[in-house]
Image (cartoon, rainbow, N blue to C red; front, side):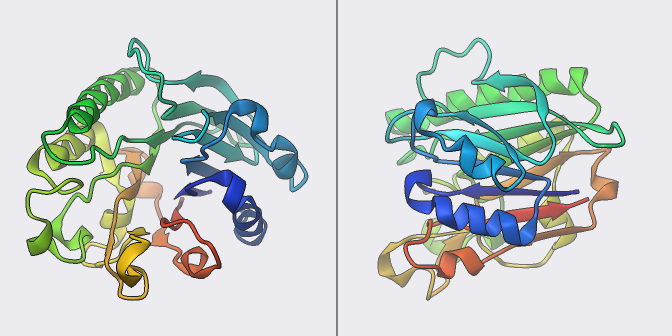
Length: 258
């Protein structure tokens, strides 16, 4: 099984990139973030034409999440339960393999937070708190769970191109990292870091200051697998090729294979 996550930073702009990548790499599941389009504008036909089912939870201009899957999903969920939030940041559902293996899949777009201490940061921490409680509930319902998405958190210093310059800032603050570790402590593993304990690779590079060419990046896109899935993980890697395309997303796909 191959699962990937990719913040596409507007599916209107990057649809051809996504379709080409799916055709080439044939993931069983691709989770998308920042589709930036309403549900009526989502091009389900583009995915069904290449043999995939698609599920979308979106809004105009901002946010938006999707799951693209070779197999149909059931029990589709939109948004965080009991959290009054107009922003579309969650979609999830139960994936069932041809041999009847069942994995609950989550595509999440965690708020950026803007600056530590701001109203948007307070919203981010509230969102993460609610997300953690929901994930805890999921572990009581499902044996195997995979959490994917743009978490907007670089968990360790080696996930940041210049840790000293970023001390105390958004994406790397103590509170954010504590929240990320709190999710792991529920019973999850950072699949990329488990497979690549010493690598310093990134999944996001700022458009400014020639960020990609100079490798001024952060590893903020993650695939977290429940503890009973981790022994099945064979590979986890970051595919930088889409970041080299014309008009790319500022993120690139992260892939885990079971």
